Amino acid sequence: MAEIKGIFNSLSKMIDTPKQILEKVNEILLQRLTKKDFVSALYGIIDSEKEELTFARAGHCPAILIRNSKIRTFKTSGIGLGLTNSFDFNNHLEEITINLKDDDTLAFYTDGITESKNDKLEDFGEEHFSNILIEHSDKSVNEIADEVIKEVSLFSRSHHQYDDITLIILKWNKKNNSNGV
Amino acid sequence: MADFNTSIKEQGDISIINLRGYLDAHTAPVLENNFVDLINKNRFQIVVDFKELAYISSAGLGVFMAYVEEIRQNKGDIKLSGMSDKVYNIFDLLGFPLLYEIFNSEEEAVKKFSEK
Figure: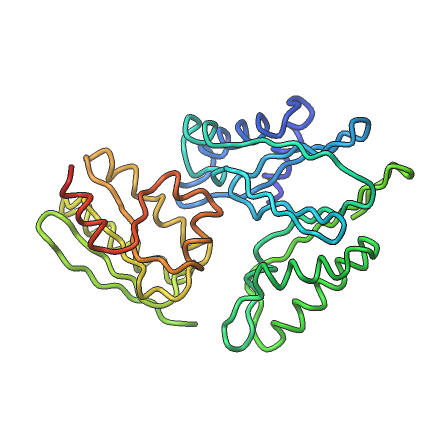
C-alpha cells in the first residue's frame, strides 16, 4: 500500500490527467506485481476554478454523486491495475469530467462497505449504501461518513469484517471554495 | 472458514472445472492446482463454471490472471460461465468482461471452443 501511494505521489507531480497517471501506474505495476496480484484505484482531480471533477476508474468501486437528493453512479470503463498489458488497459480506460454544483456530495469507497456481511452472509449492498447517502446528504461530510460507518457496523456486528473499509465524502461549496473529508 | 472444492470433467479437448462454495485468498490454491495440472497435461481449452459458486472475493479473482497468458500462448483459453449476478458484478467491476469471454451456461462456453 505504501509503495502504491508512493508511485501515485511521484507521478501526480509529473502527469496532469487521471487517465495518463493510471496508465503509467499500470505499466509500473505490471513489472512489479506477480500475475495474481492487482490493485483497483479511482484517481480524480478537482479543478476549483472550473468547478469540475475529472476522474478515471481502474477496476475500482464507482464514484457516486448526490445532487438534490438524487444519486448518480459513475461506473466508467476501466480494468484493474496490473491485470493486463498497456494496450488493453489504455484502450478501455475512460476519463470523464463532472461539472460540480453547490451542495453536491461526492462519495468514493472500497468494497469493504458494500461487501460487509451479516450473520446470514448477506451483503450490505450498494442499494443500502446509496439509501444512507441520500437520506443524510444534507448533513456535513463527517456526519454522512459517521452514519455510513454506524450502519455498516450495526449490519455486520455478528460477522467478522475481513475486508478493509475506506470512505471519502466530499462536498462542493463554491462560496467557501472548500471541500472536506 | 467456509468450504471450497472443484471437480474437473473432460469433454474431448475441453476441460471443465466446476467451482463450489467460497473462493477467496485462502481457498484459491485449490483452483491454482487445477490450472497447473491441466497445463502440465497440455490441456489448454478450459471452461470454468461458476454455477455452484456461492462467493468470490477480489483476491480469488487473481488466480484467473496467473495462468491465462501461458494458456493463450498455447492457443488455448479460459472461458467463464454460469455466474450469479452477484459474482458477475465483482468480475465486472474489475473489468474482467473486457479480458475474458463470459457465458450464461457451461454448454455455451464449450460450444464456443468447438466453433473455432
